[in-house]
Image (cartoon, rainbow, N blue to C red):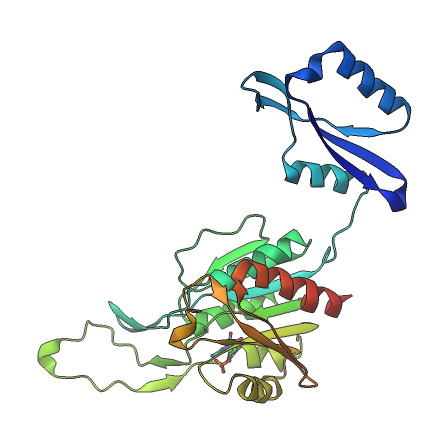
Length: 294
Ligand code: C5P
């Protein structure tokens, strides 16, 4: 028999989450449980299934998530972002050249999707606007909208504000190209493509009269990371810039690791060590978003 003993001192409560094995059904265990319950101890009983001893029956320890949920419900725990309306953009945008070609970038969408997921876990109502990615949709989003181009992203966005929070993780393609209705032919010679500026979504939203309370941008840089981020926070009028180094050696675009510096309007820099994108999403939500919205 093995116990996980949870003693929640400030509340004066004690829990046993039990992994009894088959002994749970024995008379002596049942008697002991009743005795502990009579003293005010609580039990989070486990599930039926294959037991460590090889038997099948009651006595498996509850899954850790079930234990947490039990405690959450018991304490009617509110989450730090309950009621917050959040908009997140993620992934690249693709700007078509003709019906079969486009320009884009190497963004995978991983970081944005993980941030959206983490916001949901913290109680926010999250709308995720995503460029083309190969990722599966995070669960429990309020809205998930897939777009291709920067203009589509901005259009969707303008329908969704005002919100409390905007996190601009998308690597919006800075330029589009005059669209050719018909596939360009090699035989017609090397085409001269003219780049046209795309709307800057982050900047448009930051300067918008319905600007969300908190606006966070990302800045993918290959050099002068912090200087560029400080410049960007002023230009784009956002509250935080999370600057990541996307030089080839860092394997940030498309990879699972990220290394960032976080800059606020006072130029204060928090340099974080390289960590996986999930951990970083948790850190950003816990240390930047939650304190700024409370
Ligand atoms: O200017 P730069 O592309 O480096 O800015 C990065 C930030 O701006 C990111 O948060 C990105 O999502 C956002 N951005 C945007 N629209 C653009 C270009 C960038 O929203 N056209």
